[in-house]
Length: 80
Image (cartoon, rainbow, N blue to C red; front, top):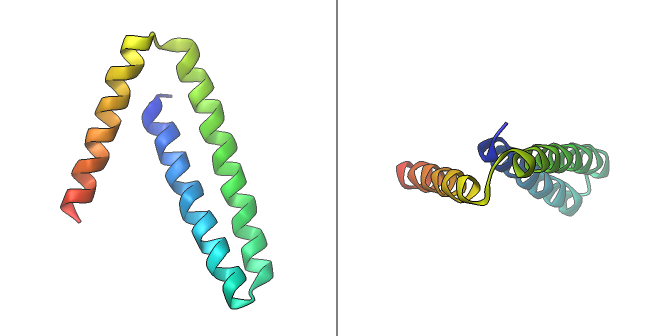
């Protein structure tokens, strides 16, 4: 479990939070509630994977892996 998994979980949480926000605006409170729950689960998963990475990686390794993750994300965004 690396920083890439933490990042992926945070992206999932962001998506679910946005969907919940939109559902509230549309008055679909049951759907909003479901997406809030899944966003919270993704946040919890991100926290677990981040805590694991903190215990396994040195600060230098974390910086290198973090830079790789961010570069990969920027590459994905550029390809869209």
